[in-house]
Length: 185
Image 1 (cartoon, rainbow, N blue to C red):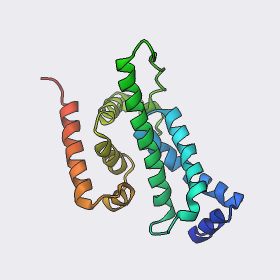
Image 2 (cartoon, rainbow, N blue to C red):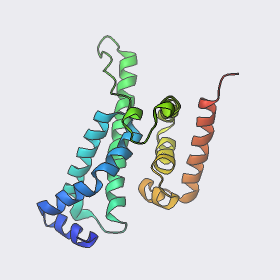
Image 3 (cartoon, rainbow, N blue to C red):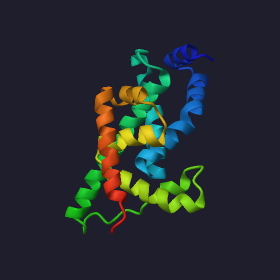
Image 4 (cartoon, rainbow, N blue to C red):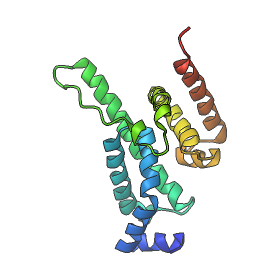
C-alpha cells in the first residue's frame, strides 16, 4: 500500500489501514518517545495518545509534509505535554511533599534502548540524565538530531522552526551538556 492509499484508507476509517500505520510506525515512534521521556510507561502512554490523535485528526492532514513527519510531530507534541506535566508535578511535589508522595520511578530507559552495550550503560546513563536537565526545546532538538539521527530539515518541520533556530538550539544544548558532563577537577 502506498502512502497515498494509506492516507485515503485512514480517512475512510479503514481498520486495515490503521493497523498498517500502527505496525509501520509503532517501534520508531516508541523509541523516539522513550528517548524524549526516558520513562517506558510514559512513552507507551504517549504512543497510544499519538495514534488516537492521528485517527481523530487524519481528515485535517493537508499532506504538506510526509505522513511520518506529521505523525512524528503529533508524537513530539504528546511528549512535550507529558514533559510539562512531569515538571509541574515535580514542582508541586516540592511545594507540598506531604500531599503528593514521590511516585515510583520507571525502569531506567537507558537499559531499555536496544544496542547499548553493558560497559557503555553508565556513560549513556549520565548523558541521558544530563539531556533530561536541558531546557525543553534544546532537549527536543538534541534528541531528534543526535539520538534519533534526523537531519536538520526534518527537525525544522517537526519543531516548526527555521534552520538557524534549530542550529542555535543545538549549539546551546551541546554547550550545556559539555558543562554538565565535565569531570570535576
